Each structure stands twice: as C-alpha cells, then as structure tokens.
Length: 113
Length: 113
Image (cartoon, rainbow over all chains, first blue to last red; front, top):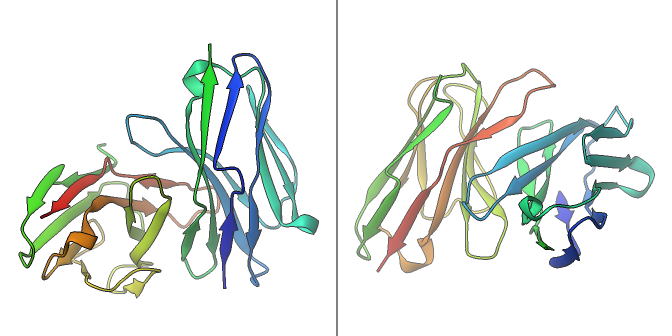
C-alpha cells in the first residue's frame, strides 16, 4: 500500500526564518514520482516540483530547495528566508506507475511578519 | 489555452438529488483525475482515468461514478447525494512525459443539505 506522511500539521515561523517541511512516503514500487504542491488561502493548487524515483539529485529553485533521500524514504522541502506570501498549506504527494496518486494530509505554514 | 476547467464553481444539493460535475482539459493529456478535499484535510483520489476509455477507482469511490467522454473530458456523477459528500472537488490532468506535472482545475464547492 502507498502512504504519504507529513508529520507536521502546522508550523509558524517569523519572516526571514528558514523552515523545512517533512515528507515521508511508503511504496513497494521501484518506479514512482514525488510531488510538492502549495495551496494558498485562495484555494487553488499550485505545482512546485516533481521528482522521479531514479533521480536523487537535490534541487534548488530560488528560495525553495528539496532533499530527496531514498534510503529514508523522505522528500523534504525547505524554504529559505521565508516570506508572508509563503503562508499556505503544502502537500506532498506520491504517484506510482499505475497512475494512482496519494496525497499527504498537508502542513499548514504560517509566516508571521 | 485554458488548462483545466471545471463547472459548476459552486452547487447546493438536497439529500438524494443527483448531479454531474464537468471537467475538461485542453493540454492533450492522457491522464485525468477527480479528488475531493474535506475541510482541513488533504486530497483524496476518487477516480482516475489513465487514458481515454479507461477508468479506475481511487481511495474513496463509493457514491460516485465517472465517465471519460473523450480525451478532453472527464465527468463525475453523484447519483444520490449525501451530506457526507459535502466537499470541494478538484479535477486534474497530467501528460505522460516524465517531466510533466499534474494541473488542477479551480475546484467545485458542493454543499449537500
């Protein structure tokens, strides 16, 4: 069975602090894909990153970075120098080869000015 | 290029009524998905369609039916609405390229009284 765990339900930080959102996944498939999405208060879902199971290279995009470690089944997301506009719910998701998506419960991030 | 569109944006039903949620994408994607998001929770997959002519159950299919009318359209039907189906429904689509992402529609808010 597939499962995505985001142990942090809510996180509050002060603007300019760095924050890491944890994501741990479970799957028996050897080929799979991991995603992060942002859901701001307006409700839409915004794609942030997709990572394939055969590519463990970490990625940086501006203030965002992702650390993928197959050995610990984790795909953590770090925001550097957080801003108020980063306040949102962040979802980690797992897609297996059979096209079945599983989302984590989400982490609500509040960035205080 | 409108991406993923959903209709209606908001709907109120009485228990036992039926309705169909419409979804269309103009990105020539093979895969389409229906999710529900309950307050304070992550997304749960209802049904998905990996290609035209195929549909598969997700995590919470009971009480729903789907139709992949053609490559562009994927509809979700509630035959006899129940208060437990009050939720926000998101449609999504994704291409086959491994660099592709999953694009979401704006969501349909459904209230069942």
